[in-house]
Image (cartoon, rainbow, N blue to C red):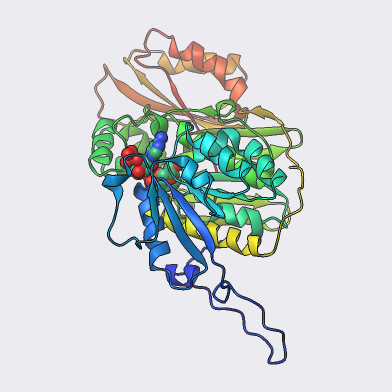
Length: 451
Ligand SMILES: NC(=O)c1ccc[n+]([C@@H]2O[C@H](COP(=O)([O-])OP(=O)(O)OC[C@H]3O[C@@H](n4cnc5c(N)ncnc54)[C@H](OP(=O)(O)O)[C@@H]3O)[C@@H](O)[C@H]2O)c1
């Protein structure tokens, strides 16, 4: 079953108050409240500017922007920001202000960590979009917020404007989730879907992504999986209630993917995407990030360009899907403002009881059992298949198919062997042995096939 959020931005931001029975006592709404929640914005960049714009254009008076903090703040000032908003480059001015909620949008670990802790210590609730901060320090910060009777929301830190974290917090908290998988990095998805559509070289797709602003000059965090595994650790925290450090999640790079892999994947009815997946089985969290074969007709196979998709699997509710813009100023700002509205509503209900966090710390493993796609680049000579088959057989690995496309130079020939399901740990020693054969021009590429 697919649950999509196609609510318009207008609807999301200006909810109609619920209908009341004529004799019911009026329920105060955000719109009625004379004392608006005051909000300090920390970081006036791509997302911060969009958040400020939405807050300044809102007319319901529920959220009042009082401060904007940024370094070199003089150069940031905008004429559309109301005159009574205080611009500052002194963070103490935020801590000492009467702001109820601080929005942290400077990004990175330092000084964002110090800023967020300082705000929570001062009794202010915090909304952040900072995945690095939450992936590394989320549980501690949540604990701190709870101990101070404050709230910490980070709905925009994964999948930008796609409301998957709020869904985990509310819409799905009645289920017991055991699996989360997603396309969480728009840069990788853009590059892989360009290789898929036009069979261009990897380097050309990367340059194009950089020219269009979808990839940074140093795109290592995206390409090598660092960004996606930070997001996966946040999804595991929010949905599976486990504490997992990003560094404990194996990340495989997409730099090893060639256009020819899409030809072979297509022969198998598949395409290639960077997939982040986490499955909780008893005491173990199976988790990894990396390029994987997925059926071309599956939800993952159909995600194009820089969109994000997250699928969740629950014991009672089954599978759910969430898709949309994973980045961009306004989509991410909508997620931030939605968090703000949630926090403002909660604060109006009075102080919260301190409840210790219930998080498990399972063993983390990448030893998934799947069928595999193995791609070799070899200098052709008689007996290659026999040598590889002997190595695979010695490791009790069963070949499912051998694929070889015609027309390649015999001095640099790509071909593929697919394997029946086996564990990653079973395959690994065979890969090392196969990659050191004299005919191997490059290490063998191994991709899981996710059905
Ligand atoms: N952009 C997206 O699509 C997106 C999507 C999801 C989540 N996020 C997250 O949202 C957060 C903000 O991202 P962004 O794209 O808006 O970043 P950005 O455009 O780089 O904006 C960051 C702002 O913070 C300021 N800043 C940075 N470090 C500072 C410091 N030490 N002291 C004072 N000001 C500082 C920057 O000032 P300068 O202009 O002087 O550098 C800039 O105005 C990040 O955590 C990011 O991961 C972004």
